[in-house]
Length: 87
Image (cartoon, rainbow, N blue to C red):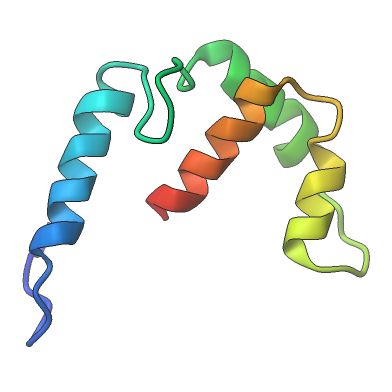
């Protein structure tokens, strides 16, 4: 992975990514909460309600995401928030 970002200092971004890797990816925890979010059950819910049921209609992304995830448990919604933070 390239760490060169021109004149921009990428140190804080790389530190945040390393923290996420340790806390969430390797530890199944989270950077936004003390809960364990990165679990197979939460990922399966996201696959079922978001990936396999795309909302191709009109509307803004966050509005459609909220509707798609309405039936899922809070931990899966928090996982989506963490995924968006990571992006």
